Length: 212
Image (cartoon, rainbow, N blue to C red):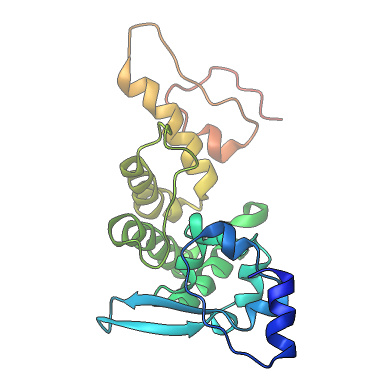
């Protein structure tokens, strides 16, 4: 519906029902028209179709700041806000952000529980698309989701208990990869860093590492 048609409906006090899956049509809606958008989706838990007003979605204000409505549908971002437990998953995101940003350590039981929760949540996302849908950046992406699961498991079971964060876990695992794949006599794999904790996990110890 274009602007002229919308104004005509307002003048004549008409209610118009339009159904569409077209992203271009959804992109053309104004912010005022968002108030009349109702989403129809299949609720897997209740095994029934549901109607939910767009602006009543959890964190709808954050959602609509992420792009045009049609684009959000195409990228399946909107679908994430319809997932069961979406609000709880956002609390997990906030907790992880507080832990991970700035290289904060993962000490104690709380850190280990959080690492386990991350690994279990990522596994649930990959296997059931709940509570999040993990979408590769490209169809040609070489990174296998099974490798993502393995990385999260290593982090939760081995690294978090040593106060090693997820980013450093990825570095350590990337250093282990060529060592395990090639492992030829004379070949050495080092991690180039001044971080003593990270350096301690390199596959081959450097005789005189630069750590100061």
